[in-house]
Amino acid sequence: MDTFDLVRIAGTLICLTGIVLCWRFARTRVGAVAAPRLKAVALAGFVAAPLGALAVANYHTFEGTHAVDGCARCHVMWPMVNDLKDPASDSLAARHYRQAWISTNECYGCHADYGWRGSLKAKMDGFRHLSRYTTGTYQEPIVFRGHFNNGNCLKCHAGTPPFEQVSSHRLAARVLSESAMSCLNCHGDAHPTRAQRTPGSSAYAHLMEKPR
Image (cartoon, rainbow, N blue to C red; front, side, top):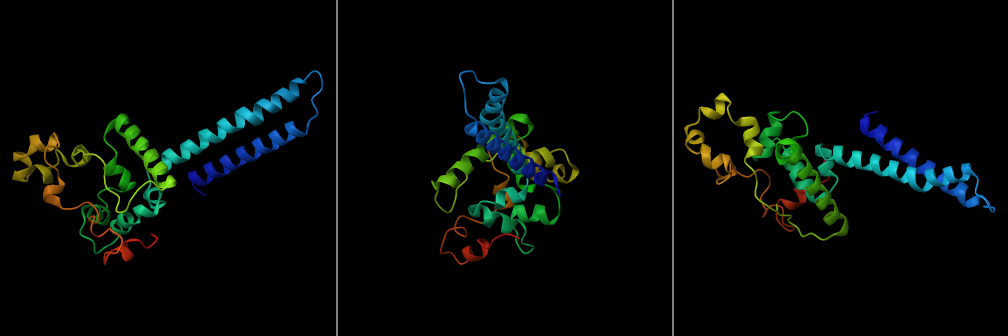
């Protein structure tokens, strides 16, 4: 049993406790003067328990976005996850995964900008993605909104001997640091192309298999 299982159990217990307390309050006959115990039950059932459940749910959501499995919960992300784990894929994400260059939380490792503000932005984007996915207000293939920050690559690669030994890296250091030129210009697509992820393409059926 891992941390997330414990969080799920805790959230379930809090919700059940709130339901029982609310039921207890509803079944209690209120006289002219409400007993202090009844007020406590009402406070716990209608305020404390929902706030506790909200806190647990938010923790689970925030931490769950770090894991690859968190991305795989939305079927529109299955092409990215399937390609990531495909040993025959030559995409940038698959190469990183295959070589274990990022040991855990591979999606989050590349898509969260450095520092607490980057982490917060990634989580806010995650909530936006969740709302669009839940309400069905998206189109396939999904398209990255914004501009990829090379800092997500440079936070691991910059300053390392293999990176610095490449002359083009040294020549383009300024434009790379300013994201005026994308790392993907030279290193290829990070994920399956938009054409491959479009319904009806020859690769779509394979990419849309439920990840294991």
